[in-house]
Length: 242
Ligand SMILES: Nc1ccn([C@@H]2O[C@H](COP(=O)(O)OP(=O)(O)OP(=O)(O)O)[C@@H](O)[C@H]2O)c(=O)n1
Ligand SMILES: C[C@](O)(CO)[C@H](O)COP(=O)(O)O
Image 1: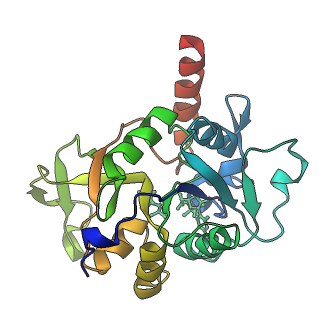
Image 2 (image 1 turned 45 degrees about the horizontal axis):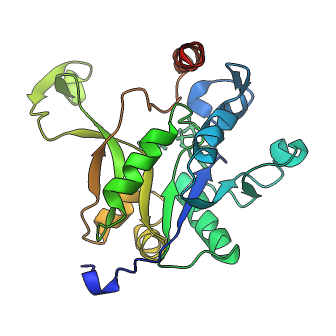
């Protein structure tokens, strides 16, 4: 699929979609990781604070699982909540895009999809992504160039041992936000199905080449138990630094 410049409208608005309906099984705690308190508040509230500081956004929509009442008691939230989470991240995103259209977004508008569990994102990084992609034909994602030597593990009797050292010069770690036109992303996710782990993969399956925008190592996804302490230390350090 190609996207022609003629299809690009300059009056597009920007929406944010925060998938927040996961269970955090790799984090190994009874409470879903996005609701665990770090640096004084639930992880997802740190994430949302960054989006609140981006004036370009028309609306931020948080997708939670059905029956999740975490946000019910928040006074004057700066975002909307839709209880339409699915069985996979891709399904939660797809349902969230439907909800955005119901909330007034249009298919030519941009959506920035961002993990609730990437609570170290900053408003400046979100702005950088928007500036890098708003005139692009496809859109793109924050990503981090691989900083370490890359090994491939062996198979069968060589499991747990190095089979090869790979060229890392063209390797990036995909982060979020990932920013695409709502309509194209919906089409891409329809084609790709529920198994894709990010929006870029779905767009790639359409034959499109999303733009890689350099993010930061600090924009990691809280995934494993040891990630909480690191995220908290960075948040507290930023607070101290003002
Ligand atoms: N069915 C799902 C699965 C994930 N997510 C969200 O997608 C983001 C990134 O996913 P990941 O880190 O894989 O979260 P979990 O699925 O919660 O983690 P795990 O795989 O360890 O269970 C998280 O903010 C998570 O809440 C979602 O909205 N709906
Ligand atoms: C979208 C994502 O954060 C990009 O790195 C990631 O793929 C989601 O996490 P998962 O563990 O693959 O579900």
